Amino acid sequence: MVTAVELAQNDGYVSFLFALCSCGVAQVANMLIKYMEKSGDQLVWHLVHRTPYVKSMMHISCLICLLAAFDGLCRRCRGATFNPTNCVALVAARGMRSGLMINVIRIVGQIIGAWLGSKTAIHLLPVAWQSDWSSMAGGLQAGVSLQAGFICEASLGFIMNFLFLVSQETTSQFLSYYLPLLATAAYISVGSLFTGPSLNPSMAFSWNFHHGVHSYQEHLVVFWAGPFLGAIAAGVLYRVCKQKSALRKAKKQAAATPQPPAATPGSTTASPAKPATCPAPGATAAKSAPSTPVKGATNLTPSTKTTPSKGSPVKAAGGPVNTPKSTPTPTPK
Image 1 (cartoon, rainbow, N blue to C red):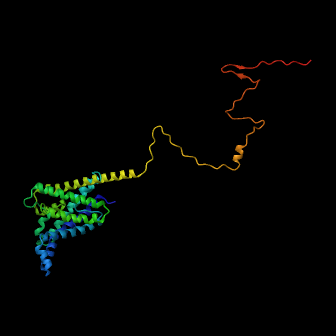
Image 2: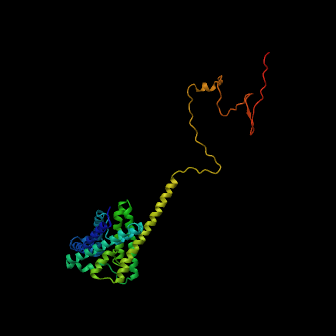
């Protein structure tokens, strides 16, 4: 049985590694683009210089590869996660009593791990790489209001966590592994026009702690309240869908099982027929032969009535016993 402290340690470990590795995604994408520009292939040159949003597509591709690698790492670490919104969605889907304190401890471990990972990256990695790290925390784009940023983070957080819950309990390999990664590319492309996006409060906090690109109101409303609200809505919807599915299956099973007909008032239920038994040899002959009374035998059947003899006393109902008068016998002369 894995304890809450062990789960928090695994989450903190994975969050530390993800914060340390994610800051190199932009550098790897830029290196790949430069390598493609220097290649003599005309097709590659046209792909780099003529295709719109090629840099964004390269960044998203590198990030998806990183997420795929960390998905396998999380599975090996007993279901660890580096996103606090996943813990909130699990609590909303399973109920408040199913591990609320455990998930709170896990969120604390994720925040500490992400903060240590970003701090380690700042001290160890080259300074030339740190020019774009302020965008790791996300932020409202030019012309985007606080309300629009909140709606963007909440909507994308709802979609992300609903797919996360589906992938946790499905048996399909496509739904459990490839669908969340493909959805990541979609909502990153949409969210980059509004908030970055972040969709991970612990990562947004860790990078904003060092660079300070958010105001307190923007950080709390957009990058904490928005993803958490979307995660709660995803968990509640998933629980409702699961309850309806279970009720539908129960009704189908009840309809499939045959039930005995209900007895109507006044109807008699026929008793099961007794199996016919073969008579023993000689039983028919004994049954057909007339019964002859044995001389001197008395009938002991309680149903037979005995008549009193002529000289026996008879007791009347409620009266004394009447004895007949004896007549004297004449003596011979």
